[in-house]
View 1 (cartoon, rainbow, N blue to C red):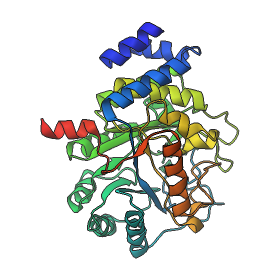
View 2 (view 1 turned 90 degrees about the horizontal axis):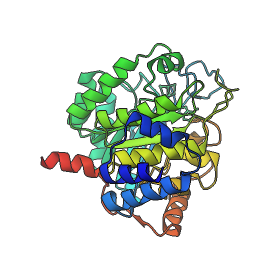
View 3 (view 1 turned 135 degrees about the horizontal axis):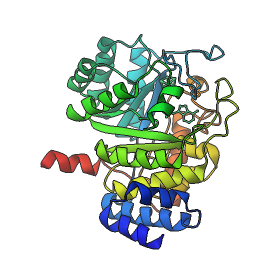
Length: 347
Ligand code: 5AD
Ligand code: SF4
């Protein structure tokens, strides 16, 4: 195992079989995280970049089996934040010192390309970097958002196992999701993706494929989180993913893609109070504090136990800054572009 980790740290390349061997080995956890931490430090430094997350609508036309926002969850009170309020939340983020905001929603048809462009222009005029996380759109829509100023886009592949994807995301197509990722990358976005860990029937082999897929797709950011069963979904009785396996997939991703951005995800924190801290010491270099107004947050329940639910935006941010300082790291001063993306721009 030591040899494999040393090889990964040096060459940033492991075969599928080698990835599987590391994922299956329970004795190498500490060493894996430490190696990923060292590679993180070498390639992207000690800064932790903050992204202010605005969950602006919890309407979704899709029905993913694992997700609390799925359209068949009739118990969920749905909300949309209006355009001026979304822009004023971004302004608030800026005043708190944040340099990037992430706009996230379900796939909500109310927010047409025209409305999104209005929001994007409003936020870009504040001088912030802007990430969108609003799902599958047409090539033309992505182009319109990019032209309006959007810098980055998050769209997790969720799993590279096509059958598992199809089973869990009815009426969606894996191929279309890959099309979205290719469009975004070729249009010059910084591309964020990622996967869920611990979906029912997901195999270690397919998690190894996920890591190789992130490399193949040339991703600039990868978010990995445990699947956490939600009581109002068909997967309510499923076992769910573990923090340790999620951390392993994350750490291996850092070894294979050394200069990308990797967030310590909120789902990791939902499983353990030190989930994000462990992630930050095992390869992660980004945190996304939630700056959605407190009243709306309880309705944006992708999974239960989201730790940020009861807090105000300022409280969320302070908690995150304290965490960063307690780990001896620093808050990123710039807008925290992916080092890999910046290098590509110079080539
Ligand atoms: N547990 C963990 N993560 C989830 N997501 C959706 N539902 C769950 C769940 N039950 C994640 C998906 C999606 C992101 C916005 O939230 O990976 O891409
Ligand atoms: Fe909608 Fe995304 Fe939830 Fe699927 S994961 S139901 S697309 S919000």
